[in-house]
Length: 458
View 1 (cartoon, rainbow, N blue to C red):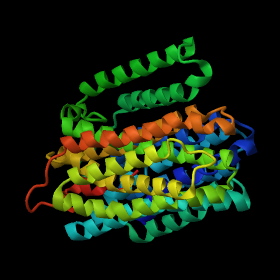
View 2: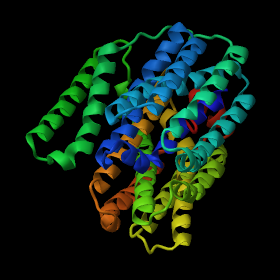
View 3: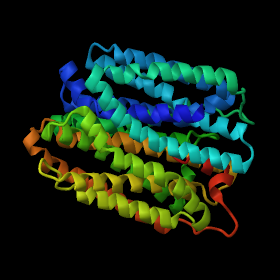
């Protein structure tokens, strides 16, 4: 059931990406508007992940999980019936609200249901593999559905999955709560949401309004003011939404940076690939989705393998591998165009998938290593939030590069994006350099409560 929820949250990003050109044609909007279809979901999801965990601890994990499924399902139906872009973007934001109640709460349910470290480790291995499978199923299933039934079908498909999950929760999941109620930090929640929304808005709309226009300058000021206000509020609260003191630890700060970089690279790759293959090459949505299978295969195989390596050797080697393969994949696609051979394209996607698969477990391990359990939970939640922030930024940057670009000019327009993917791979070397070596006879993946919970999430 928990793996099913992970699949649902993960696949709902990739399944929409491959259908974006058809959404644009169906609703009569350009690339810039389509960015909001993805980012309205990821920004809201990133903003509410930590708060959703606090709600679950206070009111009951099963209850919050069921509410999240219900909200997600109703919002999916609204997306499928959307008559306009504005309605679709709003419905996607509500989907993000529902999704925020699924991932962190499902992880807490796993911990409560499986106290034995060995059972929990096996469950997390399944969790990591499911995330890779969601990458595979998203583009391919989305492409098939769009081609056969139109873009609205990528939202209709959520309904039966939600129904099955609700039945499984009611039958198999006992109610549980946290040992201590966590206070809700409403001022911090409002400020972090405002900062994220304003940042993404500036990235998406900047090319259209001009980076030095009064509207853009006002956006910069809003981002700076909300971020500064968030820091000030968090420092003065006894139970802040985020423990900002964690960022004083270089090992934690570089792990969060690495989490952002990995998801920037993933989402830049998916969006640029979608537009270049469908618009520049004229591929169908199904063909474009199928081309990403090597990426999903690499992630599916390497995610559990990475967890095993972290347990035996520490996070440094998997992070080096992740950075190397991610950078190689980005560099292979710098000149992706209509004449690029299929073998090179598939090899690049495989490299990106391997890099992504190797990255998740060591980044989480690095973030929580050396922390007491009371702070490791917050560290894991911040890392998950960083992943979604990376996803939102990646979509915004990639969309800004290819918006209003003719199909024949996509190769040149996308080149900075592929260089950015390679640079994100290099960021992982900084996380590797800051990571701690493995301790003798200690397997942090599978024994640390929060470290195990975050592998392969979001």
